[in-house]
Length: 214
Length: 159
Image (cartoon, rainbow over all chains, first blue to last red; front, side):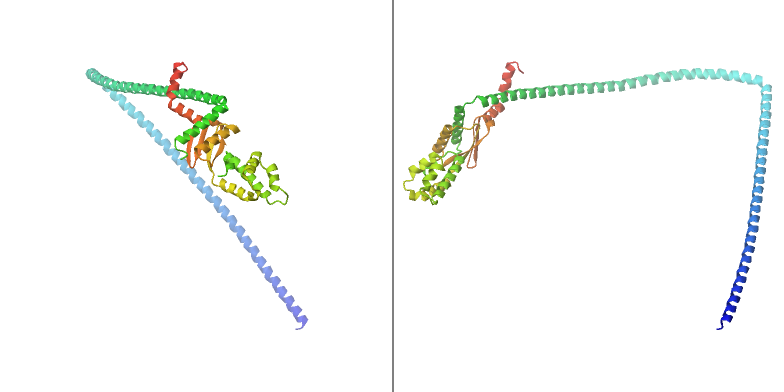
């Protein structure tokens, strides 16, 4: 192919590519612009929502405080009116109430007097029973303790006796051993050659007598 | 049994004697004049040399004589005896004499020593055993008469 044609074609293709890139760049710019607009709108919307929510909360708080306040006022008013009504009633019937109170006092005194006597009697009986029971229990405890103490004492006495006897036996054995050792040491040093010789002949004689050499 | 063996008292002595006889047998094969006589003079104890000269009439029969001695030693019995002291030669002679008279001519003593036995002897012979030591007798006494000893101590106010 002719090089000029190739050059022209290449130039044309390069120009087309440049146009395409320019178009893509413009599209991107447009997209970025749209994205910024949307982002701004979203932020505005979010702020608006937050403000409205805050407003609603504040209104609700105000409303609730108002309700609580009115309820307290109502309660105080009700209490005051009730007190007044009670006071009026008391003023009207104070005399009859006093009489009732005196009679009640009398009957109550009589009742408590009788009751205390009964309680006293009952308590006395219970106390006596309790003391008897306790005495019996204590007696058993003391008796058991005395028995245990006696057993322990007897056991201790036996232990002491056994220990004393054991120690005494050990002492006896020690003394016997000392005498034995002394005798052996003494014999070792004091036997003469002729005594040794005689002892050996005697030993041989004993061996013969007992049939050792048969 | 050859007379010469009756002069031997102990197993240790027998061992030495046998080695002396071996030396004398060897001397018979030496190429020197009177090798046996030289050996008798120089290589064995005097009593051994003396006994051999006494018993050996004809030196030509020497080898046969020595071999008969060696053969005799093979049939010797031993009494194993443990003593508390080391006896003198004369005491050993008396003990050996008692053994040869009362047990047998071919019986020698195999002696051991243990000073803790105090006195007497422990005797073992053909699988049989007897402890006839002073130590044993004292042990028995203190075992059986312990109460007597304690009674004595009490009577002296020690216990």
